[in-house]
Amino acid sequence: MNDLSPTLAPPPAVQSARIDHGLDQAAMQPWIRMECLQLSPGRQLGRMECMDLGGQQIVREHQDAAVQKLGATPDNLCTLSYCTLDPAFRFSEYDAANADAIFFMPGRTEFDIHVPAGAQTTYVTFDHDAFLSAARILNPSQWSGAGAGLTAIRSRDKRRFAEAVDLCFQAGKMATASGVPLDTVGMQTSLFQTLLHVVTASLDAHRPLPPAARVKAMQICRQARNLAEDRAVTDEPPSVVELCSELGVSQRTLQYAFSTHMGMSPMAYLRLLRLNRVQAILCRAEPGDTTVTATAMHHGFLHLGRFAQDYKRIFNESPSATLAR
Figure 1 (tube, rainbow, N blue to C red):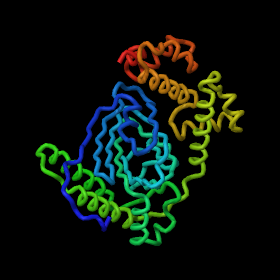
Figure 2: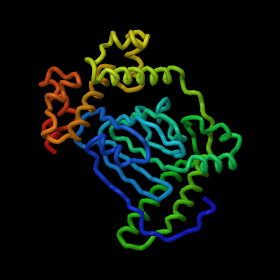
Figure 3: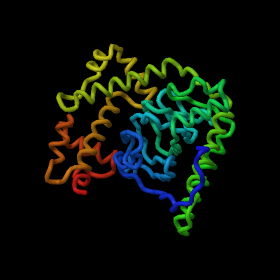
Figure 4: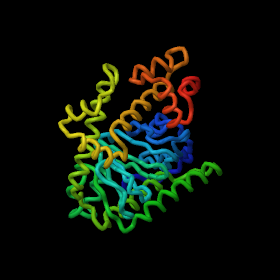
């Protein structure tokens, strides 16, 4: 970052969009491989703002419906993020029940994020090696071991994170409206240094061991989802008995895992998973390529009347309306 000299450039594009589908939410963040699954009813999934600073991306999301975000960061891209205080929020094995929480996610990290309806999340991307190198220089005792996985940080300066992001969005929008070029590199450097200070002057930047029960719950949910995905195109959805048998857990353990990590029963979650799969196909398909009935039955929905009701309850439109758009 220090080798970059400030240059004037056309104002970076600030994208603001209403999000109707999980596909849209993922598509607005192409720098990270992810899938977004809608988990609660709503025609509008949320709203997003994205700002491209060249070497950095700034993203602010507001969820009108609950969503699960699954994916992994690229090799040399890390993120710093925070969210509104909400005990129902899950960032993999961590929650957001602490008002000081900031999450550092290094490159090559798988994530499983549950964002409840009404929550707002904000994150900034950085070059993984550059950020970790600078953090270890400023605070070697706390950051020497960071980078091996998701880290939950308690920071006394979290407010500065939000202020820095707000200033970037304000500057980008003003520059776009006026046509005046921005010092994009200067903005990158300022944001890098500000957030670096926020997390290295933290209350606790160690990677605390999360409760074992929460880690186990996340793993069970992931295994159940993978089993359901493997069988999606070859067989009927797995039953509770089959899930317990395949995963080697009791029904009580399975129910507890989904209640703890997802806030719902395993069958309710797996039905939502299949509904999202149907929606994704209908969104991409041309009306002549498939039918609602064929797609629904292919994903195990044999009671078409109930399927249509559930689909409309979650996505606030009929499956035929999705296909026709």
